[in-house]
Amino acid sequence: MYSSNRKSRRGILEIPLAVATVVGIAAVSFLAMNKFLTSFTQKKLKVNAQTISNASGAEIMLVTYRMAEIKYIKALGTCSSANSFIDSFKYGTGCSGISVNTFASAETDVGSQPDAHGTTVYTFPSTGCAITDADSNCATGSTEVVNASVVSDQARAITSTSGYRFEINGVHVEKEQLEFQATYTDGTYNSKFSFVIRGGLTNAAHLEAAGKVTQENPDPLAKCPGAPWALFQVFDPSLRQCMSFNTFGGGTGLAQFNGRYFGFRPADGQIIDLFAGTKGGNYNVDENGFLDGVQVFPSYSKLDLINVDDITVIQNQIYYIALNGMTANIGVLDPNNSNQRKVLCPLGTAYSGPYVTGGPTLNSQGGWGQSYEGIAASTSSDVLIQPVPDDGLTDRVATFFLKTSSGALLTAVILGDGPGSTYSCYVFKNNAIQPLEYTRTNGFESVAGVKPYYIF
Image 1 (cartoon, rainbow, N blue to C red):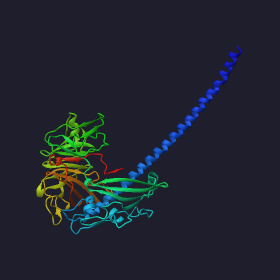
Image 2: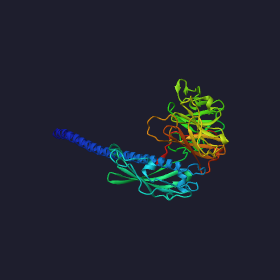
Image 3: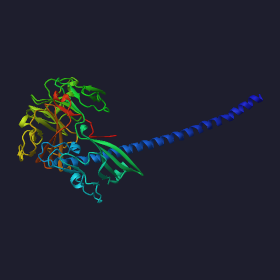
């Protein structure tokens, strides 16, 4: 009995010790877990801050790049043998006697003036990239081109830096890419990252002669990546699955608006909703842009789209490529004039002076009188007609990729002044040999959601 009671008393005494031990272990575990979560959170926040800083730097350089490209384009005048901006870093301007010094000054390349605190946002540490008619001193890489200051206190807090230093790290003309390296101070440490600005057509969806839609260069990170020149698939959020488009007869054009894809029939000017047609419903979009009571496309005129080869959309405006030979042209359905055609870029005729049609003054190189199958606008393009009031733009730039019937890829850049009364058009031929599929496909379009740069 004594022994039993002693064991009982010992057991009773051991209970709080065990509880204390468990509580102690739990407390240690909690502290360890809390320390782990704190460390993980801090690392996560640091990674997120670095991601934001890198993306902000790439966006800043993208603005500088586009302004430098405008300066380059303006310098080419009526040269019909000009190279694209990126190609010029390796091959020169391609125009005898025409040289351009780009990334040279804030006033001419970026249009940047000191802010309210007297801080100049962009400074150029060198004399720029000297591009002659056949060469460039920036082709070898490791050339510092611009420093950019982050002047806003809020922006500095978000990006954790006061500025960036950019240098050209490589020129890849076969991919239409300029590679940059950025350096910035993140607290007390210098951080570096590299990124590429894409100048050409990154990925395009093409309408095959049989009516199916294929994609040229799929993004491996897309929700529906696919394979090159296989059926183009897009993600349908209502079905939560990837879907391809049914084959539709009679259409040869292809357009994209707000991530939705549309076919186009030149015979009668009809716009076709490929999403709706694939699901088996009504697919003819009316001229107000409505389908079954919902607006899915900008308003348009069937009459003015008859015999147009292909269309593309910038924001809410429809641009087209039409006719061939000496009459070939790029134009827009003018929202100020019942969506009637307005020519913006006469491709076929080499004009010696201004050419007036439908209101605007046109300056064009001419000399590109060919037969065309497709037109696609770059994602960075500005609207050229009825612009947003007081948006601060003095030069409006729209970049179009043109696919000829012979399979060549041209880039047409249209510059418009603020009031929209003068348009200048410049055309560049891509030096690379294009895929054989370009000779057999019809209309094409830039794939939605592809950024003009990527960070690595």
